Image 1 (tube, rainbow, N blue to C red):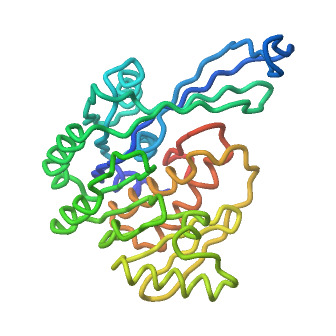
Image 2 (image 1 turned 45 degrees about the vertical axis):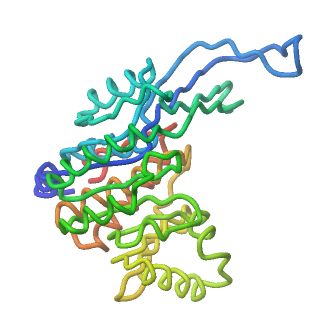
Image 3 (image 1 turned 30 degrees about the horizontal axis):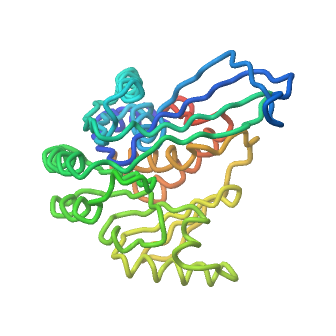
Length: 309
């Protein structure tokens, strides 16, 4: 990435909205089976905490040097304070709505000998009060951003996503959505949707050939009034569906260590490039490169502009 691109990226202003989470990793060793049940005993030796969900998207945007604001909901608890600390140390402007009625979303993974033994999820949907306050804050923040990223993990923080898209569209903003679920009607009018294969299959059904996939993807894109649909396809790279047709970019072969959070890196990189006025195809190629770098790292990770060079 040339110096000029880094300067373009540093001028970009992005607003990330969505389900904010804390990813906790407990690493340990296991040599014994519990006498209480046929399960391994893990002696925890190391604890790692990382931003997850929309917070990981924001962290990825900030790692590329862009000005980043995040809007989300956390609980009034230790995990929520930890999320705020991690966002601050990542250089993200944190506009978190504190909801005293529900806990911060936490995904706790117990890992021994490079194997994930169990994942424990702590989550509840945000209260209506918190969502109402969040929407008020969104209305104030949306005007300052070049690009809006709506990171939907299906946990409830984007309950008013249709209204958010409408407000951003009225202000001629570029709106990127990482979708969830089988009903995409709520994303009508967004600029770009970035589903992966299994997410798209939930909505358009199983395709039988590349031509069939293109037909289904283009029908969905037109019905939702999107400028583009970007399908992330793991080892098959990415496909971009627009009014001009379809273009593919191949995956960059490298050892895959961990795919968690790769979608966050892809949408973050795409958004920063679009905020810097890059054309869609060039932005997709950069996002593809970023995704291929991040899968070589453990857990939710980021890519810097230096690594993309």
